[in-house]
Length: 168
Image (spheres, helix red, strand yellow):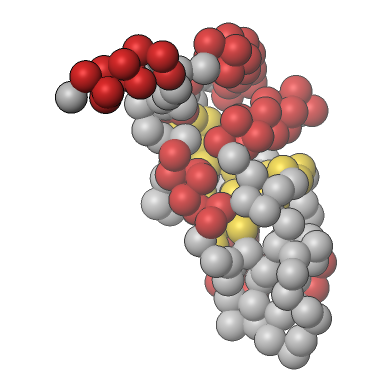
């Protein structure tokens, strides 16, 4: 038991990262400010998986946990594209999912934006070009912003959302 406590005291707390916390605090403040100014305090996002491995979705789910907590900043994930301002598109856009992505995009009210997350939607993924993959360019919906990574971590996603909001 004494070995455990000795090692514990020598190692310290590894789960806290003050530098990351400071960076995230700055990003949070800027996001909240932009959402308040440009979307009257509430930005609705519809996540569309168009044939991904679900890694990007897992990272987006982490954005809703108490550590990142996007809802506190006024950003909400919604179930219907009719309620969404922005579509987050992940995955390679398979042949079977292409009509559903187009349908979801058409159901969104104007003005509408599409943010591609990860490397898959733009064809930079590890998947080869096959008959089963159309890609975002193959369905011809305008991609407003791209957040690179495979998958992008929550901090990168927040920075990407901030960059998108700054572009508007």
